[in-house]
Length: 91
Image 1 (cartoon, rainbow, N blue to C red):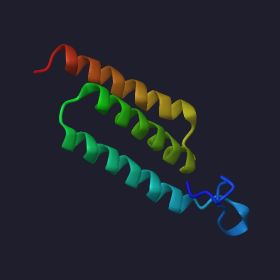
Image 2 (cartoon, rainbow, N blue to C red; image 1 turned 60 degrees about the vertical axis):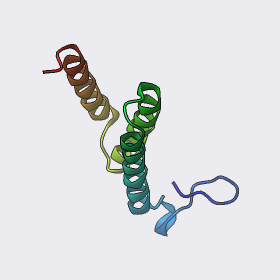
Image 3 (cartoon, rainbow, N blue to C red; image 1 turned 90 degrees about the horizontal axis):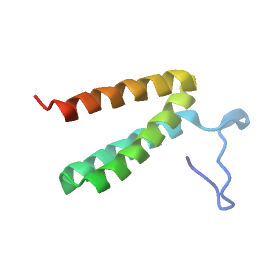
Image 4 (cartoon, one colour; image 1 turned 90 degrees about the vertical axis):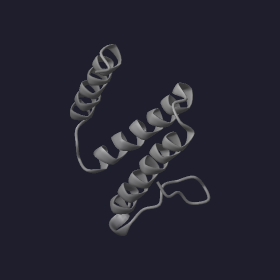
């Protein structure tokens, strides 16, 4: 999110955060992290740090879209379960 020199979030019209800009910034951050992981190869530590940050940004963007936390965590849980299945049976 865009912040001013005092570290406070910049507000759009009507005193609300500029949600559209924040959504684009979150998407850009996620794409950047994915690209970094792709460039650096299969380094598990590096990938996990970047994907954790990408998950944070995705959750932030979903909150801006009005998605409730329960829905966000349910999606994350499903993705995690699927990833564990893929790791255990990589076929």
